[in-house]
Image (cartoon, rainbow, N blue to C red; front, side):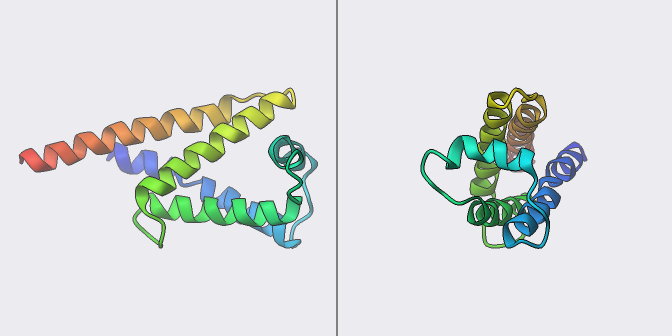
Amino acid sequence: MLVSVLKSALSTVGIAGVFTLGVGLGVLPLDENMVAVANVFIEPVGVPVKPFFIFLGSCQILGAASLWGIGPMPNLMGRLGLMLAASCGAYGHAKNGESFVPAASYVFFMGILFFLDEGQKKKKKSA
């Protein structure tokens, strides 16, 4: 039960992915805060913002779906990708003088999910 609750909470990043994808596609307006956080990483290498948001949003959606075993992305890759994206987000927010706590908390709770899932797998094998 706790694993399902945790997966549900961590899956909300899929909603953010839909909005990020919408921004990248030009359906939604660019959010200057999102651009500032992303620019910490993409500006030095010259990646345009909108294609980056299309990529990031798609990965967030697929990663959230993979938590439930849905879609083409393997569960482990989805989890690691979501943790990497949240870690980068934490760094980007901190570089812009904002709180990194929400993104860092996401990484922490994803780590707890890894731990709980492994415990469930061991419990099923011994039963």
